[in-house]
Figure 1 (cartoon, rainbow, N blue to C red):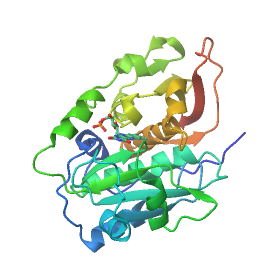
Figure 2 (figure 1 turned 180 degrees about the horizontal axis):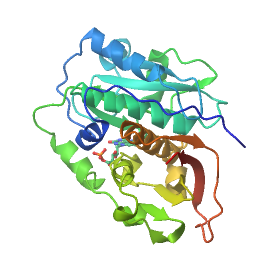
Figure 3 (figure 1 turned 180 degrees about the vertical axis):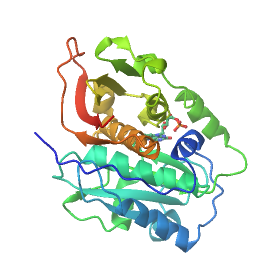
Length: 295
Ligand SMILES: Cc1cc2nc3c(=O)[nH]c(=O)nc-3n(C[C@H](O)[C@H](O)[C@H](O)COP(=O)(O)O)c2cc1C
């Protein structure tokens, strides 16, 4: 199938996007305070203005846990995993949407970087959260679903013990080496930094992306002037999460980092459906999309 991918856009953050990507981390200790209404409105509006790779129309909304609580004492939000969080940014998508996961990943991650630029902390939540009450708070329609939310707020001065434990168990600060993630022409040849100097920092922005359980499923192969994105699927993981394809969301996040970093560096290109034939592609690899460069 061929998709009509829009041209990459440049988002005017107040700081280089590579700096925001370096600065971002999954914040699991917030100060518990409110946020100004202008900030909340800006967070809700920002992703709605983006052109997404698969051109889904998503709906975004802020969930205020205090309001959900006022209506129902039993709502636990994100079940205590995230301390002091009051607000969540949710993305609703039509149930029959084509390729919804990548677009949700792309849009909410752009919002995460926007939040980082506003000095806010954030944490993706795709696993356990109060889906039923959060969906109701967003006025979700019968034909919509709420695959993931992002906790947002001002970080607490000190990280909670639980925060440190979760981060340690997910090995949150660790990333695979570039040689495990990025390849040149075939899967046996890791991409050497010195082979593609302008692209190495862009790929590093992919490497620093957040991913569900820090599995880093993105594999990128450079061949004939294109960067082809594959998902290294963890089948057991998918079975645990019936509500959303979190690993496809991870791919959308990686596409977001790649596109924003490339565009900011003036490296022109365009997304396309152009699956390459690469011998010995592992059976668990799923093709996602290609970035055709114009150099
Ligand atoms: C799609 C997605 C879903 C996630 N779901 C959760 C979650 O339910 N709970 C949580 O504490 N962290 C969640 N995370 C955060 C990851 O654990 C985190 O990004 C990863 O460990 C890397 O750490 P870092 O974000 O600090 O770089 C999720 C991340 C992504 C991208």
